[in-house]
Image 1 (cartoon, one colour):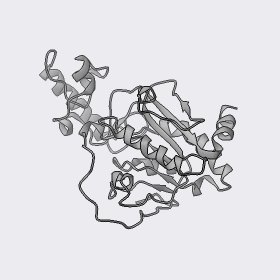
Image 2 (tube, helix red, strand yellow):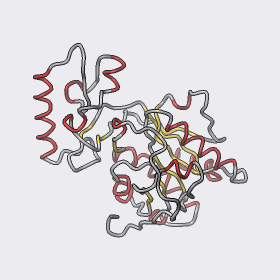
Image 3 (cartoon, one colour):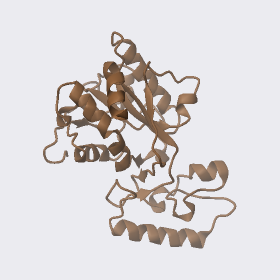
Image 4 (cartoon, one colour):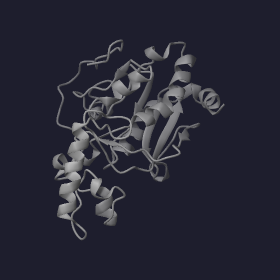
Length: 265
């Protein structure tokens, strides 16, 4: 449920929800940290100003549901009108079987696995092409390699907000015990992980230390019981996972130039 003072806009009714149309990778079940939203808050405030409304009335849509933390995090920054619906498959919107909710801007952090980022940007571009030259408004947190992909096409004026330190995400399911079937991506690619034995995902193969794993799991449970939130956002015993090289891809439609200039000042 929304926090006191916030407004929840239900998604429009549409066809019965079908099975997810894109593969789900449990390793994607990570929440975006507070600090990432704090970095884009000035952009959102400027956009609200340009639209002639208070920040709390700016309609924000996050089409990817993880654990619902985005609503509380943005509400804490003054943005109480956020749609993040667990009962709606974003790809039903993509294929046209249901409309998107009314919104002023799409703010999201798509799953890093598979082709989710590609499908998201293709959808945003298709909406921009139908906007009479204004372009669609979005602020998308995506891996640093996305803009170098052959398929990536950004609307004119798109700019990037790069954090000075890599963001550490919060495992929504938390702890190695709940991720026993999910292999760490760093370990799978490089046979090493910057989080070492504190990584909440599985390390298997050469170098695996069962005793170290058990000790790390006990430490993780102790932090969870103490309400450890994992680097500024997540709460409820979330576990911080290895940081990722990612940054915000920003386009504010017809206000892109003025909002970007105001933010830089």
